[in-house]
Length: 211
Length: 211
DNA sequence: GGATTTTCTGACCATATGGTCAAAATTATG
DNA sequence: CATAATTTTGACCATATGGTCAGAAAATCC
Image (cartoon, rainbow over all chains, first blue to last red):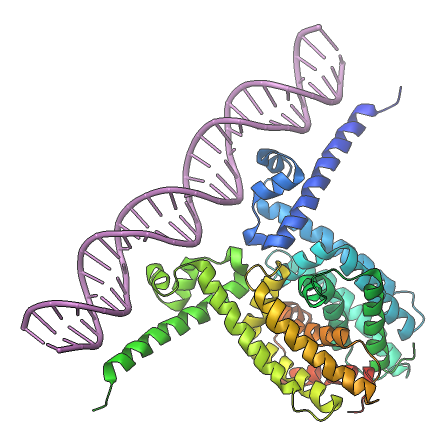
């Protein structure tokens, strides 16, 4: 009937299982931390026997590394909204929007990343030292260019980036606290918009850029 | 020589041991998370046999609860710098300074708090729902008062507080990342000042307050 | 349809961990 | 100094966990 049905289906199954395991792992790692997460629980959430999880990912650390790696890719993707901007209002505004959206749709990933960094980034130090450093230096140069061109106030680019990262990720990492302070209910769509607006307003005005 | 030497010395010894254990626990919990921390390692860092730690703190959870409780007290203390301010520039500026100083001098505590909240605050949910909610609502009302008096822009007080918390705590919780992006060396005193200034500048200008 | 590769899984193992306990050591008390 | 209270500690236990493995089951291939 078709040219290569078997190797395709085979790969599909493998990919599906790996995807289910990775999704379960991200959730469990986010909720319990690396030390608190158990392979048994990950297997249960993925709907597989534990031994089957070990068939696809030999060790807990290997599985964890994969999860963190995926998260980092998504993170970098959102970071792309910075590029191609014609100025600070557009670039930084879009970046804040993208990162807020990421916090809303992908809070578990953000938490795993935060946990990893908080514990000294034992697994992904190489990511930090290479990819993240390079990305950050590049954007810092762009921001410095805007400053030199008089398009925004002279703010230390690094500290500006930290403020944006911290604030946007706060809505994921501290989502539980935000929810508690919101009367124990999650933010509504309107409240998310309000949050985005507030952050963009403060940051853009704070660096001397008109929205 | 003195009135009550024995009961005093006794209490002193107990207090000293408890303090040493709590300090060690805060460090270990911050570095490894609740699940990754072991009573054995806490005992080693405190310089005591494990059984002795269990003599003062029956269970790991009880020890952890104490650590988090102490951290929350310190957190609230810094929050006091908000009060007594005559206006937003003074109040928010002092608050940012206090929280940045806390991140610099007490990063482990900040990390433990962050970890706890990120994992759903299983231990200190009551703190959040009572003390933190009350504190936050009170400060939000103060900020709203400033807005109503036209002393700052109409920014959602809650989101402003989140931005301040997130940004200041970022220097503790993500201290490792900041250090990596700083060429693998900790921030100098001058760089800490630069950070404080940058944060205060952005926030105060961002909400329409002249420094 | 038999051979072969891949996937699945229950049972099992070594180790680490939170916690216990009884007895020793130390300190207080009369 | 004898007695009582407090503190210290090594040895020990039950349990949980990461990981293994041999064989069953399924899928693939000739």
